[in-house]
Length: 585
Image (cartoon, rainbow, N blue to C red; front, side, top):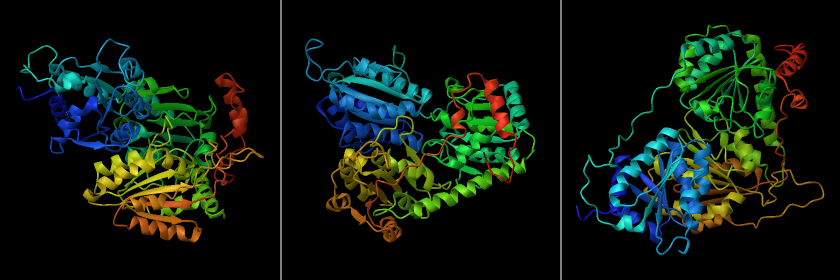
């Protein structure tokens, strides 16, 4: 027992919780844990990142792509501060992550170099922040951190002083106070709404004439149930940005993503429905939801705190999406509204024609929409997408119709730039046999992508499928206003023109630079067939407008304080709706 240290116990607990890898940056205060991980034979594996922020994004990306608990390591002081961005991403998108912080502080409090109050620093982003004061406490503290992260779907934090990591371990007695045994992988409880609430929800949905379903990330795994319910109700479907990978977007009644980055078809669906079902979504773009009072609403969410948080709800259903939808299917009769479904499908057809036309518009030198449109026909089956923040998010939301086999993740609620390449690394390490594509702008690439390509170059020879393609939309625009948003008469600042594809080649990767629209398709073919990770640098026009869809009846929003007034206006507006002929209002 004398040979074991607190750091060894960390490795044992990570192994007990079946953690495959931990992401971090080596530093003295966490060095004993890193050394123990290096001596563990890759179980678990330590993945060094170039920066603590990207390490936290990798841990969150691991949680998003795998459904497992992500783990990141750092030390106190500025290194711990750097973790916050990735941890807030996990908090706002409800993903379990455990941060392990090494602390090496000697002398009186408040006088040490790099000393920051870690409990206060992590107190907002993490529901659980605990110190281990002796090596014998390490198993119990880590077990509680992992249980809390899994149960609350949120980040937690454990602080380990360096002397605790190095200290020899006395015999651990199972019956000793504070020593707990873990049950790794224990499934969460089955959660179903009460029968009365299910009956009320079925009544609302069954009596609706124009039903819309908005799908969020909480509906993951419920695609078959959603499609079955939509067919039974003759409903149209839209998704939140995070919910985009849940359903096959090639479905004829799938209107696409709702919100500023989304489609006109989705905005029109919300503007014309009289009944709304929200499934696992906490979408913040409430301006695109129906005018309050327009639609009777049912909401399904596993977290009761989210029910009614974004939109007034008539029937709340707290439960698992799959189980709750199956229960609703047994209560909702098959009463299809073919006319309404025809209107929705007509709107979808018009939008798909419009988006193809947008991608074909000439630009100087390349239309960025064309780059994503060409990828859409070439997406590898069973692949993964990591999407960054910026104009690329608009083109992803509208121009990539995701088939069921493709997963995609992004920093949806926090909206932090610089997430895509760390996400892609985490996705690739989790499934090295599957292709991964990261979608970035040049801003995100300069922020941290250039550095994390070193991580890619270090690991790729061990991957069964070497394909990790990094698309860089190089528009040299750092105005912060987005494509087409520079005010008239005001010139946008220009970002230095970095040879991204050339940097990839310097690292031993593949790099392709394309600046002619007719070469975009062949460039995608080349990088997707390469025998190593690739950077596809596309020189695109920063002046292509983002063109957010107009929220339906935007001029009426905020004018009516009570639901009855809004309902009366809505009824008058819909009075002349020519179902199936004139399209959606």
